[in-house]
Amino acid sequence: MLKQSNDKNSWSSRSIGSGWQHRAFYLTIKLGGRKAAYLMLYFVVAWYVLFSPLARARAGHYLARRFPESSGLQRLWHCYRLILEFGKVLIDRAVVGILGAESFQVCLDGREELLELCAENRGMILMTAHVGCWQLAMSALEFLQRPVNMLMRREDGDIDRHYYEHAGIPCPYQVIDPTGYLGGTLEMLGVLKQGQILSVMGDRLLGSDKSSTPVDFLGEPAPLPFSAYKLASATGAPLVIFFTRKTGPDSYRVQLAKVLRVPQIKGRSTEHFAPYVQEFAVVLEEFSRQHPYQFYNFHNMWSGSQSEPAEQE
Picture 1: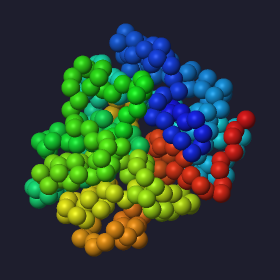
Picture 2: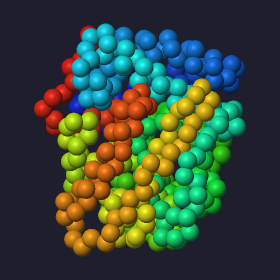
Picture 3: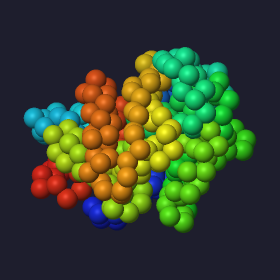
């Protein structure tokens, strides 16, 4: 379920749910399918929202900015709906691995444009965010027939299982560790120069604060990473912003939201890349306004802001 941290300045990718709770959902999926797991989810989420201050606090960072006029029971309802939709995505991810990808219909917008970008043979940076179910998005991109490399950090002890782990198959993409040498920069440059695909998250800073720049997001400054834009500038690779959203109980849509072309920029000054990071923030904010309960970044993106959300009682 939601991720936990020891304090407001630290972050852990490990779930606050226990192992037996996860296994209970997996068993329910095997025996009763997606609908049975959804039914159980309604009660589990209600318990977390009512009795877990941590769950409310993690959701509160985003909800306070997305629904600034809400409070009390109304904010509690927003919290319930957000965590419920997030829980459905986690169930869907498990369903893909346990019951097969054919359990869902995935519609892709921008197929021809993606093929044209691949044909440039400059590599491609796919920039997504913590929205929808990115695992299904990856499956929708198999037609590109290019190796996919993913910048991803996974902590020891994390019990959340990816779909390929449920299916008992090898990881379908190469993982690049952002905590490795130079933050994985050399590996990322290498795969782009080979014309491969690099997938990154644009709404989460995984490395040093020096790799971020503050941009406006939902009315407040939020530090977002700019390393991917530097890579696009150095290699000429197109940077494709794409999001996945749930459109029905068993359907998703993958949307090519925008293509950014970052020109060659001399020097390492942050200010040169800030306008491109802001373009991503604008597109992401528009998504969150259209689909407010499908944005699942429970990290405090506005860390250091003067206005922290109050805990709902």
